[in-house]
Structures are given as structure tokens and as C-alpha cells.
Length: 569
Ligand code: ATP
Ligand code: MG
Image (cartoon, rainbow, N blue to C red; front, side, top):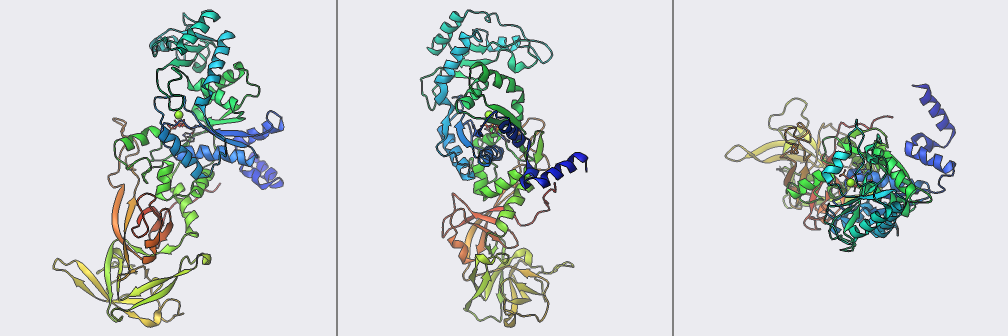
């Protein structure tokens, strides 16, 4: 171990334990507070309402909200609705629901960037008056051409030296709707030779005759993101404006805007690496395409990692929080894996949810020596590892269903489940021994005949003989039918997310399998979003949209087993 690391460990051991996990953002905030740059912490989550949120946004939400909580500060939810083309009220509502579901409470601090259009306009006028902004008549293509490249400086626009008076008049005319879309823009006057291209007189306002979901037709000029965003933060007294790495090169412009617009306590921008999941479609753009092409059943399809999709799939806010926590906050790009998220939901549900019996691919078992017509009720613990969940009465009768794969007529070695002549334990019930088979004319097994041993009733303390296999079952006379959906990655993992030839997505044709299962009667009462373990199979949730008590639809959240191990630090 490096000396540095040892030293860090020592220091951590002396101080509070939480110091061990301090990330670079917390360090920066600590420093700001210690030096008196800020006396509080005020963060925000600033989504653009142009789609549904996804797991990457969850990271940003939980990070920003978590910091506000941790430092006793404030957290704003602010819609960055400065681009009317792509924005919809539907998205505003879905985003609010998702942020609330994740547990990030903005209280009464819900804001819309469009509420600051007047302030932004005044800031722009202020810049013009200081000689720091000008109206430019170059076309978009010309602006690009004048901008230069990474290796060559840009050239000044011929309109750069317009007088302040002319600029004020033209900007006012832009606002008054006297110009066509794209004919004129307002640009910051910074430095066309700056090594940072973002500083080469960036556009800060454009003409766009569009109706805005909030301000209607009041405006026909709209501010550009790099100008609007710092003002939004400053107006709300945000202290730490946390964004993703691609904005690092925009930071000098961010600082320029808040400084030149004269905000007293400018916010500080801090960047961190986006969350990427291997072999998973995360970008809003791609999720949108799957939705629009009808490949998935809406933005909340359980195969998507949109927050509403994850919710429908059965993930809990706690599991997502845990995942964000273990994936860490970093300054360098890294890729997380879906199995890590799956680990987090298993951990959350393992002890907290009842373990029920459901048979997805049934074959009938007839217990020849069990009285016909008799049903008895056996005690079954709801979760052997968590007594607090209590127990339930499980009906048992002469006819049962078991999983087809739990029986083999000619078993290989080390197959310990049911086969002719072999004895197994029926979970929560008796030992049964296979004594015969019924087959149809095509040779398919239609029923398995067994005998049971009344002495071996579960819980009666029978220690007599050993059986190697325990299988689950449901009582045929009382079982209920339930629709069960099994999911796989919507992406073909062998091929990777994108088709290299045309950039399309490599889809897995088997991402959804629907089956009709037999489930124990208690599962019929499941309400939407109730979660269960189906023993020996996986964790399931009653679908938020399609499930009803009496007619449940279960989504498999994750299978029970995984080779995933939590990385050790
Ligand atoms: P996408 O990358 O899916 O198109 P976006 O960045 O356009 O999303 P915004 O609405 O602009 O979406 O993002 C809101 C906030 O969420 C921003 O602060 C952004 O940095 C953050 N964010 C977006 N994607 C991720 C991600 N993968 N990991 C962490 N934070 C993210
Ligand atoms: Mg964006």
C-alpha cells in the first residue's frame, strides 16, 4: 500500500469514521466552508424537460440532494426549460414524480429557468452596456467558419465593433420580433483568439419564434445554455453547481458570465464523471428512440433504465441509492455494471420480503397415497432469515404443480431433484418419492406419481433419513394463475450496444418472455408494487400498471443468483 494511502487511513482512523469516504466534491466544499467562500451549501438538480430521467440522472439527483442534506443546506429542483423546441409538460410531471420517488425532497424550491427570462434579458442588456456583448449578423455557417479550430485562432466578426447604442437598438429589435429566426444573434465579446473555443465570442441569445410551454409567445428570443445556466444558478444562490465532465471546458465561460453580470456571490462549478452502465442504453436520445420506434412499451418499460422503468421493474429507491453509493463519485470516466445494480436490489429485498412459491413451467404431481379431496394447511415461515415477517398457512393437497425442470426421467449424475425411485423434500411440506409417470401418446409427461410419508411433515422434527433435494411446489386445487414476465437486457450483450456500421442499437430479440405461472393463493392479493421472492427463482414485483389484486402480473426484477461480488475497496 502506498504511503499516501496509509497516511490517509491513519488520519481517517483518528478523525470521524465518515472521513474515509470523503470524495473530491466534499473536499472542495469543506475547503470553501473553511475559507469562508460560502457559509452554506446550496445545490440543485437542473434537468431539461425533454425526456424521462434515467439511472445517470439518479446519480446526479442523489449526489446533489445528498450534499445538501449532509451539510444542512438546501436543494432546488429546477427545470432548465430554455429550449422550447424539445420540451413538454409531460416530461416536467414525470421528472417531478421520479425525483420525489427517489426521495430527493425539494420542499418548496421548485423553479423554472423560464421564470428568469426577464433577468437574463436584463443581464444581456447589461453586458451590451459594458461593451461586453454585440449583435452579430453572420449566418450560423459563417460563425462556425470564423470560430477557428483547436489549432487555429478565430477571426473577429465584422459586426464585433458595433456601437453600444446600435447593439442596444438591435437587441431590442430582436426581442420585438423584427428579425427572422437565425438572422441575428447576440454574442458575448470575449476573445476570438482564446485557446478555449467556448470563449470565442459565444452566442448568448438567438431569435426563435416559438411558443414556450411556460411563457407562451412572450419571447421570440431565447438564451443559450452556457449563458442561461450560470444565471439560473446565481439567481437561486446556488453555491456548488455540480455538473458532468463535458462541461469542464465551459467553466471559464460560466465564471465569466456570473462575474460580468455582477452577481455578488458567484456559484462554483464542479464537474464529475457521468455514470455509464456497460451494455445498457442510458442516453436520453437512445431511450427516446426505443420508445418512439415502439420497441419498448413506453418510457417506463421495465427493460429500460429510465427511473420509471426501473421502478416498474421493481427496483426500490434504496437499491438505487446503494448503487450510486458503491459506484462512487469520480473525476475520471469509468463504467459501472448492471450486475452491481442487481446486487443492490437483491440485498435490499433478501431479508425484507416474503419468500413465496410460484411454478413458472408446471408439471403435475399426483400423490397417490394422499386422501382425495383433502386440503390441509401447513405452516410456512415467510422468510427463514427474518422471523419478523411471520408465517402463513400454505394449502397442500393430493395434486401439486412443480417445475418441469425439477423432474428428469433419466437424470445425469449429481441430479438430486425428482426422478423415478428418488425421494425429495417438498419445501415446507413432506418427503415424496417418485413411483411412476403418465405420458400422452407423444410420450410427453402429463403427470408424475409419488407417494408421501406423513411422518416427514415439515417442522415435525423428522431426522430419520436424508434427502438431497428440496423442491418447491404449489397445491393444484388452490393455486392461482398469474402472468409472469421475465426480462433480459434489451441489448444483445454479445454484440454490444451500438451497431458499428450504422450506429443503430443491437437489440436482443428475447428481452421479454411472458408466461402463465401457478402461484400460491396468497399471491393473488398482491397489490401493485408489492415485492416478493419466488423461492429458487428470483425477486418479483406486482406490476405498477398492469397488476390488480385478483389478477396479478409479476415482473421479475432479478434472478436469485449471480456471480457478482461487491468490489472490495
Ligand atoms: P443525457 O445524457 O441522457 O442526454 P442530459 O445530460 O441531456 O442527459 P439533462 O436534463 O441536461 O440531461 O441533465 C440533468 C442533469 O443530470 C445534469 O446536471 C447532467 O449533468 C446530469 N446527468 C445526465 N446524465 C448523467 C449521467 N449519466 N450521470 C450523471 N449525471 C448525469
Ligand atoms: Mg442536456
